[in-house]
Length: 77
Image 1 (cartoon, rainbow, N blue to C red):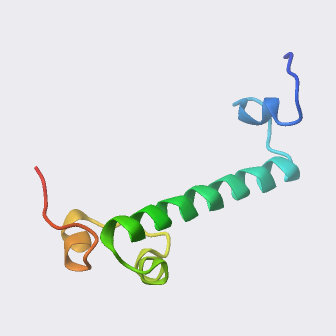
Image 2 (image 1 turned 60 degrees about the horizontal axis):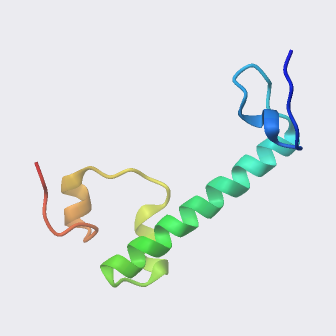
């Protein structure tokens, strides 16, 4: 049993299953985070946001791959 206040307070509980509304809220948060990431990469790399979006497509790149496609200038250690 637990005590909480607010509509989404128990959403983060590991013992409370996600409701359909919780799922919607989580997806909205993830979309906002992804959009902020794409925007910052585009600004930082001097690339159009559309180009970054086409490259990224929600994937994770290795350092070498990122360098080859222009997302990083050099590889670190």
